[in-house]
Length: 313
Image (cartoon, rainbow, N blue to C red; front, side, top):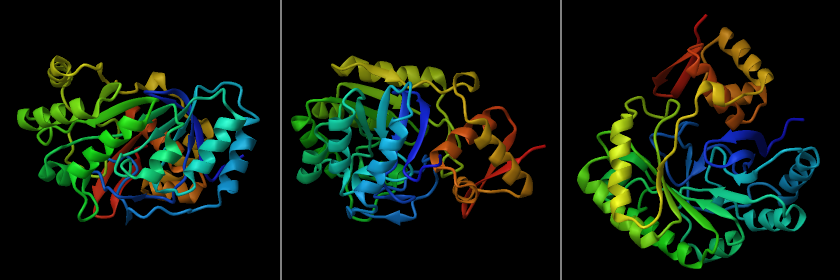
């Protein structure tokens, strides 16, 4: 059965076997991050909306969870910012009351976490995984390309405010881009901000599949280790590097891969076009593209319209 709002279960690098819940239409987000694996934000917004009837999402969850035999966690994520969905509290309440055996995670860019109403709606999540990639406004603008008027200091203030109320686990992700936010001055600012936020752990991430912009590099393992050690010296919480998924560690549905190959043999396509043409969720497409790319069966190229994929054989 194909779902409109669900994807997976996927082998998450951080959460195990995760069923994804996508609450947002494609690429609604207050940020347009240069490293985003599902490409450029098409709707930059801070406006929370009930994009879909909550019962529509709940019905899909009930159908999918009735068939699950092995699942580690349910995760709000997808191709947009999940906290923009004004009905998220209703979905969380349903999961917590009907499926208490599953921990509930929220992957978010953190921009809206200072909102009192949103905080109330998501406090019963077990794990919240926000991001903080920069503290200085110029680096924040270069990496995250926010909606006009959005300030890095406001994002940090929201993270601090939410942490003070949230009793679950907070894992803060920092995405490292060589030559942009890996220099001493920005790392020091990040360390100072993290000390105020006080997450339960800090997770350093880097590019695992082509992002929105072609120029983004991948840090050398030794440099990532040095950044980890720098943070670890001044922070009380654990600091870890999120390891890149190796081809043998992740599996994609063979039917998804077959669908992608058939379409790419016809013409080059973006991840969004592949999703729309096949009817397969963008996150399932992204996982299969990553594996095909790692196996060198496809190549990618950046254009003004985004990243396009090509079948090599």
